[in-house]
Image (cartoon, rainbow over all chains, first blue to last red; front, top):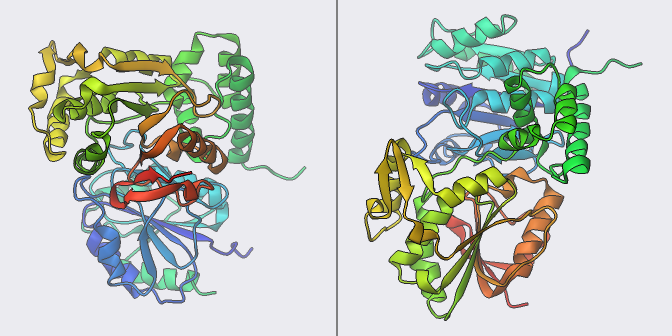
Length: 191
Length: 278
């Protein structure tokens, strides 16, 4: 059976995540036609430098997610620092200042679990480098909803704790190098 | 019968549980943003060791003592004193000079939770010499939160962050002037709440109760869906005096509200708006 077409991509990263995302996002072509939602752990007071940093390097539009805005294809949304990012069933974004999850706000699990509900089998989940275990439960939820799951190869990741934890929780996830992940993403984002 | 995904069954359970809460207790979460309310309900289910949200509904319908415990999950708000110091700096430097021209002032902190922002504003107004002429209305739907707000007692390990925020907000005094440390807790000076009315008020169902010069409602409306957000913004519009100010959370926006035309940007980067002349 052919898998259903992808409708959205969620990505989570922590330690080493800026470099990993720089190896992926700027290489996506301008006609990439899926929304990409990103949680990257950064200190709360280093607030909101990510969107401008990536906007200057990406062919795709990059912005910090706003509460209640509709998700658009071909746009990269970063969770603002100190807020959780969630996806509603109607495909709009929601923020929350609920307590940190896995000591993290934004939390990868919170994004992935809500996106898994919203997109079901149309979701692609990707856990990258990191030194904590956020994202493991989230990736498991993506797989349980029928979505595609990928994990950065712990052997080559800057920090292996997060991809290893994701794999333990979600053994069906495919393990790949960043270069290979990029190729797969490009394929999924072709109309 | 077509197969139904487990999360679709949960969605039905959520809807029924919220309806039960409304019909039984008149707490109306039916128009809260669903993704967050779902997380909170699932947390509550796990906390109470229940198998399903249906079981949680059964418990809360038949056992009124469950209500406050569940409300704790549904309305929990994590804040800090002087959270987003730049917001308080903007109030201090740009809004208060306008408020200074009024002989008496009313300020509404809508969704005050455990009161961190109430004490922050009371200290700010005291530092700027406006405290004596101001009446503060601190409202929330959760009675436990209101009690905590009225008590003004916070864990000492939070004070370092509060102090740092206060300094960054342009504080003219030392935060330690306002509390006494006691057994690991900071007890805030009761004179700070001399002009504060703590009151139960729901942005979902209650009406205008006064004419305000400033309304601060931060990170409350992000939990509402759009129709409910519209109701709340409409309530703020109708509660503000001409030229009154509205401050919302740094990641909130009036852009998607149908009342956006009633407000002018005042300090856009801090999400402070001013009521236009009607």
